[in-house]
Image 1 (cartoon, one colour):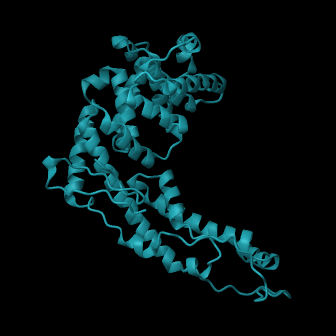
Image 2 (cartoon, rainbow, N blue to C red; image 1 turned 180 degrees about the horizontal axis):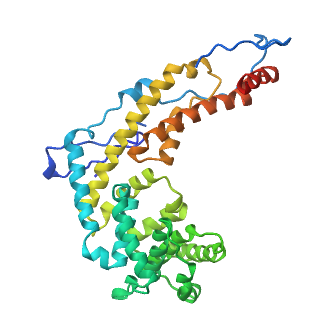
Image 3 (cartoon, rainbow, N blue to C red; image 1 turned 90 degrees about the horizontal axis):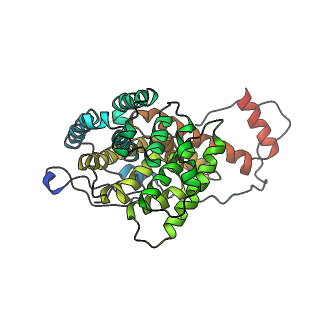
Length: 374
């Protein structure tokens, strides 16, 4: 199956052969003017004879007409209704006895929701589940001990997920594994899984435990690198996730791009993946992307109406880059205002920055600064 068009990426094909009534999709690539009263001055504000500097900025490849032509089939009632059905099914899963009673299963489920980019639909259910897990942990009723699940992998996952959600989890939970980690000679698949979990957890260090977590990260990187170099028919999924994490940890990545990568390269290749989660992740990705495209169309119309891209050709026209940056800050559908205003502000700041750094003379910039300050 394929995915997205962000708009740099192709749409995910969300539907199986049993859903022929829903749209199928083949992968595609979409690779102010204001009158200001002149200040009293003896200096000329503008001189045609001035030789202007140029940074040779290239024009944008994302033309307004192309942005307005972007189309999506994922905002009709059939897709949205299908998504709501899948969301309700996942909410039922989050309340199942297995996830509530088995802390490790519950934490793994939450981790999958985060990596698939759909956890924002279930914030209340996730918070309730994590509250129960944390309460059992604090009361000494650790669910991670059930079925011998108290391993480096389980403890690291517990540490990362709960710290990420604001719970105070001390680094002391790793002490019983310290000697085993330092004296490890050979690394098998299960050990690699634990080391990868420890590596990801180490990026959630707080003041007072950086030294220990930094040391743990260095050891984990050493063993994981050795694991990737070995030729022992290693688990391909663990290798893929390890190589990806060593480039940049999950905690540092852009959520939308990470969700796309995880769906394509990991989750849909796992033999034990949950088909309901997979269907929801693909469909939700395309729906959210359609919302982002509508946001981009509105912003592109605003930018064109200002005329700044043509009037100030010496400056960078980076509307798409600024919008992509705003999606990295807030990709959820309800954060539309954040994306819109962040893109507009960043685009105007870019223009002002180039006026100062590239185009303006000292006299002009002094006049401009005086006008802005007034």
